Length: 368
Ligand SMILES: C[S@@+](CC[C@H](N)C(=O)[O-])C[C@H]1O[C@@H](n2cnc3c(N)ncnc32)[C@H](O)[C@@H]1O
Image 1: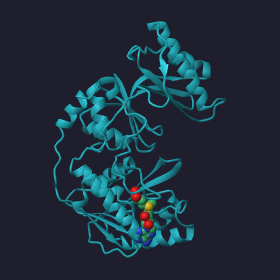
Image 2 (image 1 turned 90 degrees about the vertical axis):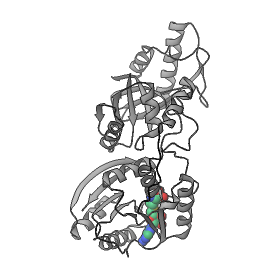
Image 3 (image 1 turned 45 degrees about the horizontal axis):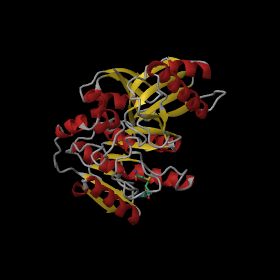
Image 4 (image 1 turned 60 degrees about the vertical axis):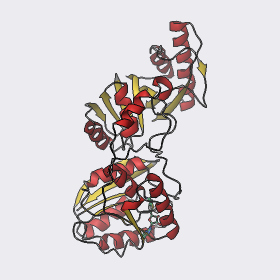
């Protein structure tokens, strides 16, 4: 079957590389659309749900087509064979829409829902139950400009960025899927020191530690949508094949505010990695680095936390004091400010890429 995983648009290549690291062959990377396609079976789906760090959802492709109107949406969904749904199971459509259309995502949901009911009635003679709150089967219908993706959601309403360790809620936390991708882009090796000098609630450091200790990102999660279709057997098998280690890592988190540091410790403890992260109250504009240290960070953007002038001074001070670092990976919506300061201070911009993150166009920079 054809499987696709979703991720933050802009990070498709990182997810594709991760998917291939599990031994799966990627068929297509849809850049800018946040989708990576591969072929596989049920075990592939279960492994990706449980082990992939840079993936938001894992879906089984039911149909991908170009379309023009809502009538096409009905026709495309009605043509799908839904006999994998048992007659006593309930379903829900989860629609989404990106682009200019003369209909809403609610219209897509309504039309697609009717198409599923009609298709099942024709093939099995049964009217399927709709349950929008706790469905057994979730069908995602994503309309992106003139394309429509229909997929069986094997992950569920809680996407895979919900790791379960976030006891402390920072006001501007980084999505752990993106945090993992940033660590991968930094090419950090576990014998190097990795510093997040504006660590907030510690997401980047927690994800780094879990990655190198081989702790599954979904270790704390009980339920995936696929268990409602296939049960728990495959999941138990995947869990048995995981071997965690307790390698000691050089991870340092610096943060200005004590309450965030306390929160970062709580989250790290819940994730099982507190013993290998040093958290220090301090200032990102007064770092004492050693040559070769690696920095991965998510500074304030100014939109949510502070004002532009403060951001300019913070970025300048941070980049000045980080000049000993061998590599820096920074994600920010204030990309003009970051680029201007980095260029003026003599950093080489090795990579600069757009990443769509929570309705914001951010950029990820790799600086040397
Ligand atoms: C966008 S948040 C980081 C969120 C973090 N990645 C997480 O997932 O929780 C930026 C953090 O930088 C901290 N910060 C701002 N100025 C700082 C400075 N000069 N030194 C250290 N930390 C600073 C803020 O307090 C805030 O917690």
